[in-house]
Image (cartoon, rainbow, N blue to C red; front, side):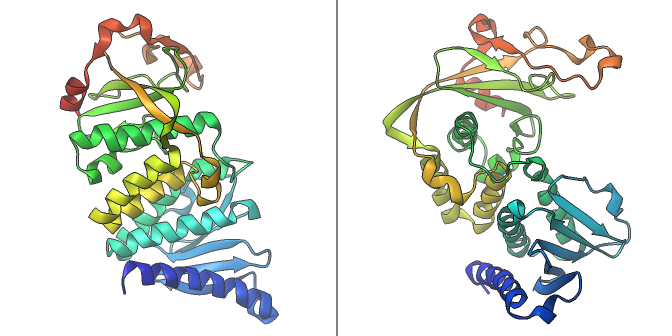
Length: 328
């Protein structure tokens, strides 16, 4: 079975489950109804048409250790768990994400607990989406610009040094505090459509090295340009490259996009075209202007600080693209 047939099978399983619920009231006399989707995975639906996935797990996995989220419910024991949405507004995204994750497992031919680990890791990476009371909603203009910058950096800058596989694997922005984490360096991408060189930090440790890894900043100044590329354009162009190279990479990139709340239902609205006017690169050394953890008293450990950094006053920290690429 090729990947397209597998994906058709997943869609058929979901459709069949919903169809049987509508046509056969006895089909859902219990709390949930199930249908086998793949290997150890079963799709579920409850009386309120809320979808879920049932899977077998190992005895050493503590269900209570799995993170809680406003939009999902996790129940089970040391043999099997069911993960389901608890609000219909998350249903379509949940089904899309489940199909992408199971496709990844299928393409990588994972079985047993390696399969379960892959499933849970990718689900947990999308946790923030299930914390959003207004999900699914289209990306704000600011989020579109931010995602444009991250995809540009991934596809146009990191790939000058890394393979497509390593570039995608390094993209941790959807789930971590830094946008990219390579073997050697952390990267934070800041993108603006204004002439200002002031960048916002979303937390007190976003512009900060971690352990022995240095942090560099890629600051992209983009402008509206009818001859440029929209967010959809730059994503689809890279998807075309990935599809020609590997179905696994293609699917992995789609999962990362879904974790960023980039959904097909909204792409028709992402029409604004941009071009990169200038790419700036800065290295965060010890004397770079950022708030260091040691400057925050332990009593304020839960404090979240946001502030602006004026890069116009950081010329001493500027590096060129070649220097940055060599560090990656």
